[in-house]
Image (cartoon, rainbow, N blue to C red; front, side, top):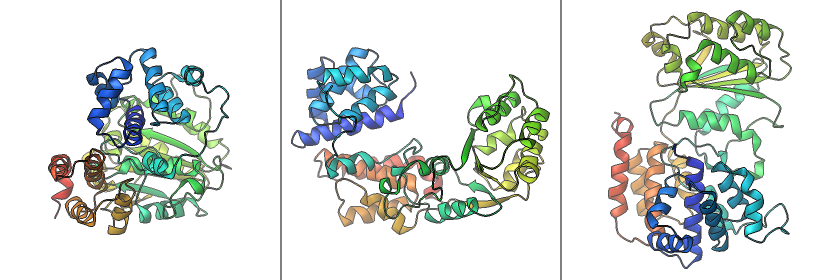
Length: 395
């Protein structure tokens, strides 16, 4: 079974909130209590907390009922939990089981502390999907958004080593416009788009092996543009469709792991030629391509041993460590404030790399929520930093 990161995030939020509501119980003790109430083992709860939803629907429904009654999640959060676990059809049962059939569609506002807890959980490992959990990258976002509002939209080649936040940045670019300004932090860079449907967004993830098939990636692009595609579209058919496309609605084409795409033997030079033609000839300046790679454009092409016609249309944008202000804002999002000594430690050891800040903050917050007053969290944090040695040991 594949790990479900959204289920993992919601369940851990729910358990932490319920433990807090129960007198700030240690997470381990509360997990044992919850397991007893559900008639399962603590091992099962811990397995679910790792992102593996219960196999049985009854266990999932019982879990939501306990979390709601113990003030871990509200009704909306429980519905989200069963939905991301692959059971959207359970919404009616969730409402019925908790005897809330008469509740309005929108839940009453959460206590500010709970809102902060839900929106500020530190993310260590997976990419950040929720724009409200995205921090930093102020300069980078302003630069890209400015390119989108130019009379002729421009193209950006985002450069960063592993774990520098390339994928999270692409997610934010594609999702930030879906939130109202009230949903974002005052210092957070807002999307310039005034309406959710003002632009069309198309995304390619070259880490997905299916995108290395020429017919498959062409069909994916045509579908993204809202165009009908044959089962096995050719490059000629793709360009014919682009030539007749109505460009009154600008398009942002994002792509991740370009190193893999350029290195694919199944994506010929003609495919990259077609993207160049799309950008230079057919789009009337209404297309912005934002591609992410581990290397600057010229090196990525050279290492792929492929002469790309995309040369000279991209500006490189290098992802660097956060500024101190950006790091401090991320640290300050903790629902339990950190001492300045701990803040200074996190700033020093992370060197501003967001992945390292997230990892250290996660360990510190877990310790505070477990009432652990020792410095053991620092040892766990140092273990987590081993995954980012290639960043932390840069000169």
